[in-house]
Amino acid sequence: MKIPANSRLDETVMLHRRPVCKGIAGVLGSGMLGAAALGCESAPAMQTSAPPASTLPRQPVVLSTWDHGLPANRAALTILREGSAIDAVEAGCRVVERECPDMTVGLGARPDREGRVTLDAAIMSDDGRAGCVAFVQGVAHPISLARLVMERTPHVLLVGAGAEQFAREMGIEVLAPRLSEAAEREWKAWLAEKRYEPRINIENHDTISMLALDAQGRMAAASTTSGLAYKMHGRVGDSPIIGAGIFVDAPIGGAICTGLGETVLRTLGAHLAVEAMRAGATPQEACERAIARIIEKNPKPETYQVGMLALDFAGRAGAYAVQRGFTYALQDELRPAPSMFT
Ligand code: SD4
Image 1 (cartoon, rainbow, N blue to C red):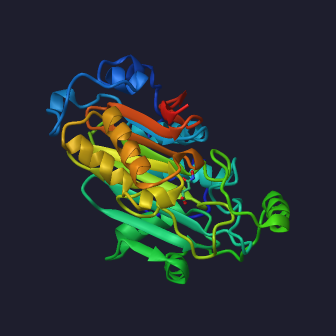
Image 2 (cartoon, rainbow, N blue to C red; image 1 turned 120 degrees about the vertical axis):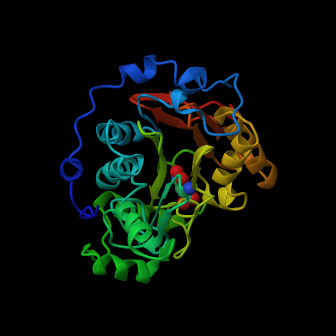
């Protein structure tokens, strides 16, 4: 289904025509999520293949990065009750693209060092289909453009002017570059010193990445971001790269990342976590192993943040970060993730 790039969430929900979710108390109360999902501790059972149908969650699960994961999850849960995981993660990401509460997602985000907001997004379903856009300007909802790449092209990744041309062909408005007032003010202040040292949990955070498992047992992942503030013009991070910022693979599970993308690109962080689950790790153990590898391969971990979330097909969740300060939303609850360094 094509969703107009500039439509509001309520319009999106109407487009999907899904019944409203009755609540998630049942999810949190059900034994399906298990201790790992609720407390992000290692769950006792190892898993190497899809759970039997009887152990699939009766209620959907949604997991998102940072505080804005809460409104994103709410939008996703509205769709998830009877709708698909892929619709849910797209709708959740669109909320944050529109509201842009931390100036790190969507057109109101902080620019690169040339004063341009360049956006990256990716979406993937558990059957291996994926669509991504990178270095896109003037598109209000890059996540929906990424979905169109997945559904309407023979490709996985479109970048820059080509992605914008595809947007126009799909009837999506491509706006002239313009900074929000706040972003312009901050960028001009930054120009005074031009120091490029992304501040942990400030300038290198707040990408929205999401994982959802629907009631039919289908999983999807998505991510949308403006990348790092004051990056070089043309820089692309991990978020629109399948295997780096997001990865999902049935019947194993999915993983998503946020933080300093270069460290995740070097290690294909999300793929690392999914492959750890394939080898028998719980989602929590998978996040911890992937973060450990990222630290092993990227010196000076005290200078960067990476947060990782993982979910398996039994609905068990995991979360781990390099530094303290990474928050994530599980259903309608915000949690601090455990971290390597405190
Ligand atoms: C990037 N990983 O472009 C993104 C930034 C991010 O939370 O996740 N911020 O490197």
